[in-house]
Image 1 (cartoon, rainbow, N blue to C red):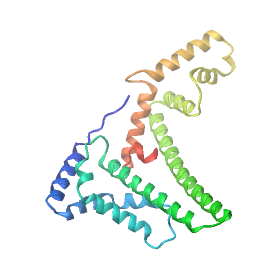
Image 2 (cartoon, rainbow, N blue to C red):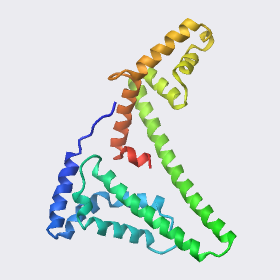
Image 3 (cartoon, helix red, strand yellow):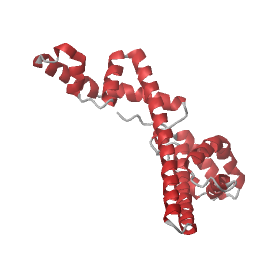
Image 4 (cartoon, rainbow, N blue to C red):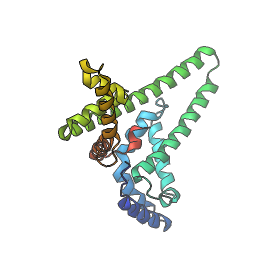
Length: 229
C-alpha cells in the first residue's frame, strides 16, 4: 500500500521563495541553502568524478545554487515529492552533465590506449564506490525497519527476511515446516496462509513493513530516492 505523504509545508515554502525571487530578492534562496547545504555537499561528494581540480565540487554546487536563484526551478515545484528530493534530482542532473564533460575532457587529453584504460577504470571505480555506499545505506535501513517490525510482529519480520532472501511462498512454507515439508497438505495450507498474510491490503506483512520503513526514512530525514539512486 502506498502511503501518500503531505508535502504542503514544502509547497508553501517553495511558493514563498518563488514569489520573493520573482520580485528580484535573490537572498530568498538563503533559506533553502540553510536547510539543505550539508545534504547537497554530501550528495555531490559521492558522485562528482572530478576531484583533481581544487574547489571543483564547490564550483558545481555554486552553479547549482545560482540556477535555483533564477526562480524557474523553485516556481515549478508541484509537491509530488519532498522539496529536498525535488532539488536533489536537479542537482543529480547537473552532476551528470559535469561528469560527462569531465570524461570528454580526459578523453581528449589522453592519446594512447593505456591512458584511455585508466580513465575507464577510474570511472568504474568511482561508480562502484557510489553503488557500494547506496547499497550499504539500503541494507542499514532495511535492517532497521525489520527490527522495528519484529518488536510488534516477529512472525511478519521472519517472513520479510525470507522474502528479502528471494524465497517464494512455497519456499517460505518449506523452511517453516522443516522436517514436515514432505507433508503436501500441510505445505499447501501453509503456503496459502503465508501468501494471504503477506498480501492482505491493510494488515498484511508487506503493509506493516512499508510502514516501518517509512518511519525509518522519516527518522533519518530521507526519502525513497535517497536510497534508490
